[in-house]
Image (cartoon, rainbow, N blue to C red; front, side, top):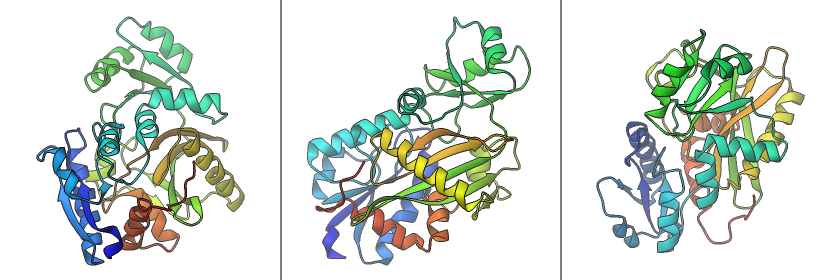
Length: 311
């Protein structure tokens, strides 16, 4: 496929999600090579960014800090190199769970109640306000790094200290216990953004943590997800609204929770989702009739001139 020129697949990087990114990037690279694309692995942790000037475009398979937080996107903008996924601002905001929630609330997207926690917080008051159990998480990490489910009174402070090791900005979030779901978002160069089929996640762990995401083989993924067609269509439309509210483009994933009576709450947006054999966007794409190789090409096509400008 000469229309893409020489393609760098950005993988690895310096974040806590390096190992997952290597898996994603190598899967993407293999798919591009199978289809005759002149593609090469490029690890920003091991190679100078200036070397990217030798490439025509990039497929970003980096996760976490320095990969999906707007920093690599800014560098690529300065070098004039097209890249997959969201731009600088959307990537930066999407990485920050707190500011994502603020934007969502301002635009009518429903998200679980939360409080910012710091060393001076009244931990008991936050436990009482949000109720138990609750989740504590770093605002700027992915892959469930640093997350704790607080089940008993008096445990919030220790959970905060763990999360603060990953990021100084820490969120305590109300527990929503009716099920974990995700909506993949994919841009077509002709028709714009659309939502993929919803996937329900059923971890055998207490919640969908790093181990359940990447290491265990007993996590169940249901697609069809079990929701009514009407409810799924409503959530897909709202997921697109949530995605656009952050300014996202290209492709991504919006996670949401259901409560026990069928209300849904959007949790976070992922602007550079996993592309491993355990990953959710490839799973949803497959349910929509889009194989992995075709998915990779569709994402890369958004870097071509004339791609739909939506969001």
